[in-house]
Image (cartoon, rainbow, N blue to C red; front, side):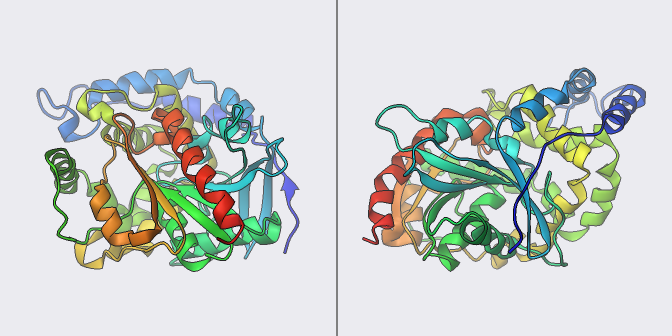
Length: 386
């Protein structure tokens, strides 16, 4: 196994200069595509213009400074140049945890929870926090083969935790593709990944569970998204190169493509609060400046079957598992449905009144509380083999 190499996030100045030059010279249409066109048509022109102006003066060096406030490393695992943050707690017996982002996320998705988990208040569990960039995302290198899927990423992340960092056992948390990776860690590596917490189950099976009115309304929101919001996934999963190359050096296109998700996958679409403009621009900047948008969406191509109901095959955890659901998310599983699918492995379920798909950004303190509550109660048992 290769040794780790310290890494500093530092984008070359010419790359930043090119970004700002493209932002300053790019043109937007003179009028919306239809009178009164709003979010139902996608990113509104007025919103794109506003974000474009903000991005033109955005200081990415601040993002670098924040990321570099934690130890960053790179290591070769199965030929993948894997980037990860490793924030060790000052508490010696802290719980090792790997946090996995999804699309369109990055390690930035956890910038509000890393220190809170590593150095909690008195009486709260502490964590040694590991945050990798998924292969093909951000500061990691691309996958080494066609068809690289979540099982490949899970295998590499288990190797990172056990073989590279030397943790004999650990816990895992994730959202979006990170939920899939985390569920696979539990299913395939239960001897080392001792417990998991996710934000989605991706289980569409009808268990015949009786739902209350609030749960029915949440399921209806998911169905509505399935009808109106899945165009991106069809493109990603069928022709990733087409959209990937089109947005590779197109910051305005990338801002529109990702910015719409930050709005529609949060409470912002329902008139509430979503991730901040700053977090959106930091995220889009990482995708553009690392040139990883094309490789980030190849997971969709590898998992084409997942985007048809017939192809949905839920992954069942083999370890204690918890889930937090947020009302702005595009997925939803009622507690009874999760219990029917996971059985006795379900050890924690909490439904929140705010937050969305990017909970680490718009509900960081709630996500942190849930991670502490679940793993804090489970670790003494699973670490002892109970």
